[in-house]
Image (cartoon, rainbow, N blue to C red):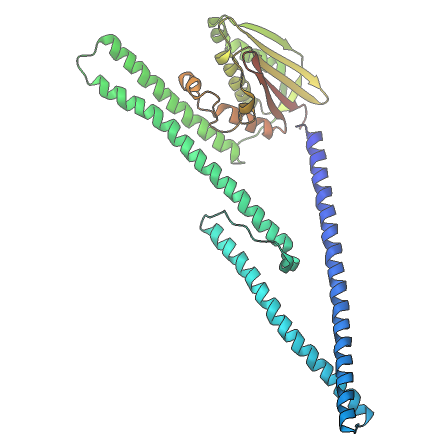
Amino acid sequence: MSRRARGRARSGSNSNNSNRTRKQTFSQRLRGFLFTCGIFGLILFYWLVAFYATDWFYSSLDKRPHEVFVQLINSIGGMLLWGLTMTLLGKYFRSKQMDFFQALIDAIRSMSRGDFNVSVENNSHSGPFVELVDSINHMAVELGQLEKMRQEFISNVSHEIQSPLTSISGFSRALRNDRITLEERTHYLEIIEAESNRLSKLSDNLLKLSSLESQHHPFEPKSFRLDKQLRNHILACEPQWVDKAIEMDIDLAEVNVTADEDLLNQVWTNLIHNAIKFAPQGGTIGVHLRRNEGEAIVRISDNGIGVPDADQAHIFERFYKVDKSRNRTSGGSGLGLSIVKKIIEMHQGSVSVKSQQSVGTTFTVCVPLTE
């Protein structure tokens, strides 16, 4: 999403929040006005009740005190009836309010214990605490999602670490056998080395992603030629794409950007290496760069096996793998595209994927030309 689109989204969100606030303010004022009218109406009703009750009482006694005392007795009687009614209503509403506050307290205590599957009912007794109830319910949902992501993250890390450790342990035990041939021993040692490298790369990617998400990662934008950076990456990867007889379709317009050069290096490394990895033998990889409405647009494509539609929405999630067996043999951990997305977001840009099975995959990266 471009900065212009994000600005429109924020503007729309602020407008919706402003309209909601105005509606809530009008509703509160209307309830306050009706409540005041109800109080005056109830006072008038009780004064009339007191007036007719005392008038009937004086008539039955055939004796009426001085008019001053009559008015005083009527006023006192009306106020007594009013006070009795308010006492009963106060006890009723106090009980409802206590139940409401107890529900809030129970919800907060449950969240403090790690149970985020809570929801406070937002009803007429919430009164001025409607926004507080909405905030608590929203916080419970967000914390629940974070907890789910944390558990999935731990599960994925454990799985990714356990797999190479199991291989290393198994082949290390196999090397103790004196009867294995030299070829088998060499093969086992190569597997152990590959799995060790895989563990090292996983650790490095985890630290890199953690640093990027910590908000303390160095971010040093400067002006440089993006087309030269991409061309240098393509030349650096020449042994890989020559080894697979891949044809490189290069079209790089001259574009200057203001960005962190080291961080963007990681983006092109991940995307170009992925394209080489999944392009078929003798296939084609395209790297195109152009300028459009204040953005540098980079498209990196391959004619590999493609990504299913159902997986494209999750491809930038941490540890997500379209084909786990394929990624395992390729040495991937499912973190590379997460790192790409985070770096591009740090540059206020966007990255997207478009793919069709058996046709190919295209990654599109948009980077603003200025900060």
